[in-house]
Length: 327
Ligand code: GLU
Image (cartoon, rainbow, N blue to C red):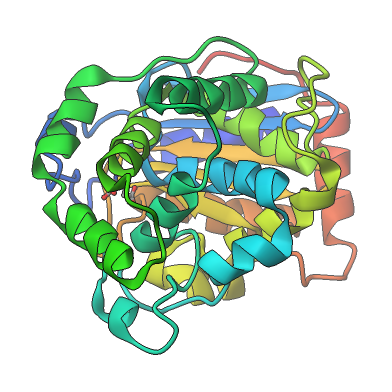
């Protein structure tokens, strides 16, 4: 029988020396990332932790934040009102594309592309920028189970170079899809992307979604259970940039990746898994992350559409596995 912790360590050593891909550099501060960093972490819905590599190294969450802010917007506005502002269709376009914004409904296609994420963030309630930022920080704290902070140099770096995101926001202002406080919305979006997390944090966040919105380590409810399915559906169809279809086909787990090199994936009712490695492919997904997830999905039958006995293998592999073995 396969021991889950031993399997994670095996994956870590197997892919540690894969050096394909590039660190993101369009946000200048991200170019300083260490391309050797690599971590894998899994947290089960009952709070067992398995890990290998640099699981405590901090990095900015970037696009992965979009998932959680969308969940908060659902709680604040409900499905139907939110749908009027942000759609749920995958685009097949790069995450920072502007092209479709000027077509048809003028509504961003989904909350995982930048336009949709900025529109979503602009809807977060609060009396002024400080209150809205605190609301987001509190939200992320519920998911990770401890205080979170913003990487100010990354925030400033993106704020001063994020011209495409500014252009999108102004286009949406022109169409009346977001309100007048466009610079405030952009600042909040850049701040949410610059929140510092570790690979372990991401796995706990994923486990929280796997556990109907309740953080399995703290017992705190981070997202109303009613909206977990909406968030997971969007992750499944739109979470992996313009590789989302192939990811759904090959790996078959709701997931979200970010340009700093994180991938967070949720096997509902079972486990949250995260990988961190900053070397990205042309779509913006972590190269080592893709390999790790493909192999994990295959080995443990984690693909959601795989209705064979596969996922029993996962249950068996964690049952007798030791936790927290350092690699
Ligand atoms: N802050 C980044 C941007 O807006 C996030 C991109 C990403 O991680 O996909 O460009």
